[in-house]
Length: 291
Image (cartoon, rainbow, N blue to C red; front, side):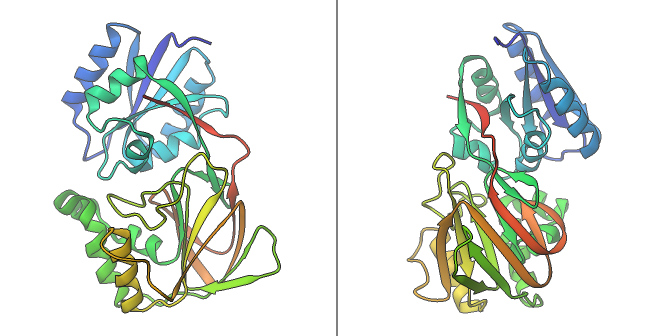
């Protein structure tokens, strides 16, 4: 069905949102299609609003915010919905991977002129993710990044928090099976990538693609300073992948058992610790408005 109106959902508490620029963007869209900006007051409010509005096939719901906001919206809209993105976060990984302009006004114009692009979605313990799931260390790091640290240092806040947390963190042992195969792989920290970028300009899984029907796993077997620095250097495209201590695999389904409950993150959003994880591909692809 043809889009007849656009609803922009934005987090009222966001510290990175330029409200004046958003108002100008909505005003431009409104010249061509009725456009309403809705400021959500909580995650629950965002979920309810996204679900309700997306149930109307004539309404295009656009998530305005960072990757966490887009994550919330995509976990709430009805499966057949087409979703728009207006980037307003720190790293804007999802928008950049999909080729959506990070300039708010240009992204707003794309809602009027772009086409729907299919995108695989991952799932972890029943919840969808768009670009990455991480078990263990990166979830601890993401949880340690305060809004103040993010405001002061932007995407580099995660580098700072990572160094701080590494000194004290003791990783669990992760046992992983891929696609129900007979082999078991053991490591201390794992990420499952659906897109190339991990955060900012880090590429831990540069071969990952959001439309290839598989997930790319990076398993850190040797959680040492040497290996982690080598891996970070590789992710920054400044060197080769570590010759040992890191394993990369692809698959459609992963079962992970942790020696003790470990926190996990999906698209940068941190969730409570669990001892078992089922990670795979969602039954339905998402559809985003892209160029």
